[in-house]
Length: 196
Image 1 (cartoon, helix red, strand yellow):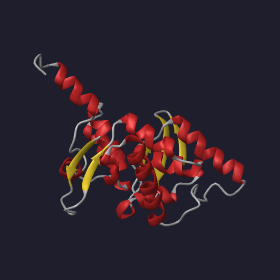
Image 2 (cartoon, rainbow, N blue to C red; image 1 turned 45 degrees about the vertical axis):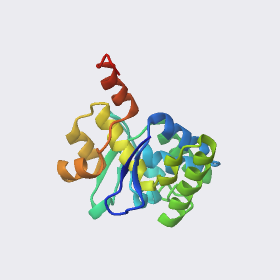
Image 3 (cartoon, rainbow, N blue to C red; image 1 turned 135 degrees about the vertical axis):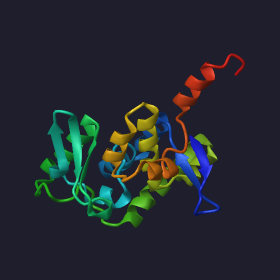
C-alpha cells in the first residue's frame, strides 16, 4: 500500500493498493453485490456514481475482450473500459438470476453514501485484521486511483488509460491518479540497485 498526503483534506491520504491488497478488499465482501462494487472500482476504474449505474446490458463482448460501456460518465460522456471476464460473467448472471430487464442496475443500492459505507466497513475490517493503519484512509475513489496506476505500472499506453478512464488530458491524470508506483514496480527498481 502506498500513501500520500491528500491535497484537499489535511487529515486524509490518497491510497494506492497493490493487486494483493485489491484481492484482500474484494475478499472482505460478504455478498456478491459488494464484491462486484469493489471490483468495478478497482478493476474497471469506475467512479462511485458510475458503479451504481452498471447494468447487465452494459457488458459487451468485443474483439478486445469483455468491455463495460459507461453511457453517462462524468460530464455525461460515453466511454468503454475493459473488465475481467469473470466480473463480466457475474454481472450478466445477476441479470439472468433476477429475471429482470437487463437495463436494471446490478447493485440494489442507489446512493454513493451506501457505497462509501461498504468501503468504510471493509477498510476497518482490513485495518483490524492486518494491523496496517493505512487501510483507515482508503476511499472509494482510491479504487479508481489504484486501477489507473496499476495500468500505468504495467506499461499500458497512457493515452489508452486516459480513454478507458474518461480523462480528457494527461495532466489531470498525472496530477491526480498516477502519483505512486506499485510495490512490484518499486521492487523492480530496487533490484537494479546492488546496495538496496
